[in-house]
Image (cartoon, rainbow, N blue to C red; front, side, top):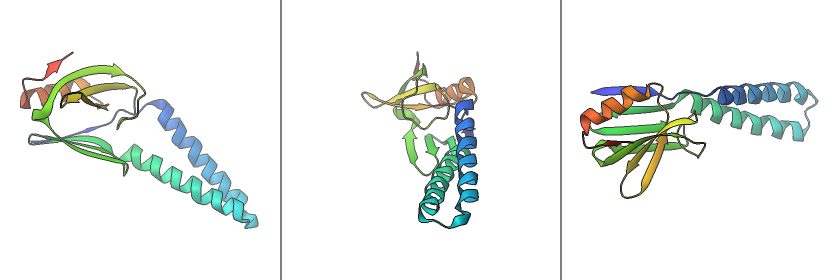
Length: 139
């Protein structure tokens, strides 16, 4: 069984991507004078825009067999055995995590380790991992 859950995307993240894209377009427009400062600005804003769009397009959670593959662009990748997950909890947090929304699911694994994700359909996601590991506590 392989199932992919895309991340829920908050409006503030979409707005941030749009503003960076506008700043990038403005930097390109202003760099017609060929000054080094504007060229550096175009490069830095372009890299920032590339990373943000990569995160927007490639943040997902894939269930393959008994493993959960978590991906957040080029910045974060994690393979988590579903058998190691002991608890799930609905959290509304802005802690750094591979999620594009503040409404997240916390997955506890190991003794005291958590990873926060935000699949679009949280209830279906929890149901799918619970069928693989029925010992998961839902809190």
